[in-house]
Amino acid sequence: MSEATTELQACELEHILSPEATDSVCTLLGHPPTCPHGKPIPPGPCCDASRRSVLPLVTGLRTFELGATGRIVFIAPKFHDRMDRLAALGVVPGSELRLHQRAPSYVIEIGETTIALDAEIAGEIYVKPVEPR
Image (tube, rainbow, N blue to C red; front, top):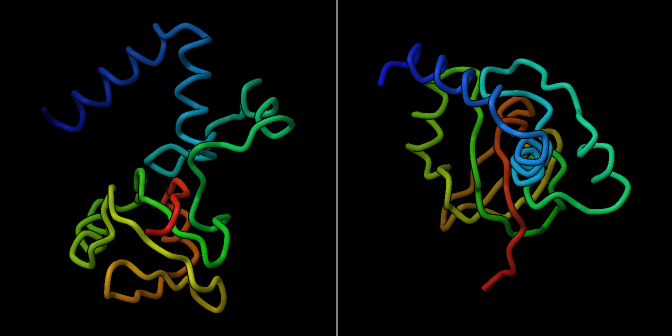
């Protein structure tokens, strides 16, 4: 399907979901602040409730705990070619990573590869914590 067709269908689907289903999807994704195109997503009631009671299942790499191991759940790049570059480095959904540092760059380890990322790119990577093997 073309990107335009996909966008139209996603928009239609978005407007037919019940509030409960919308909140469930938002919670599953870790209450993302932006859509895959970088546009802001206004926080809903589920976002406020989760901040008070439950940690999200998925979190952005920029707020991930230093030294923690996580599995990449999804990547929401602002530019399509960025996904190709990340994939060439092994940064793809399903990969396990460890966050080593945040400044001056985000440094992650994936397998035997260590990669430095700027804050913008790190903000586009969403991970779920996992126990190290």
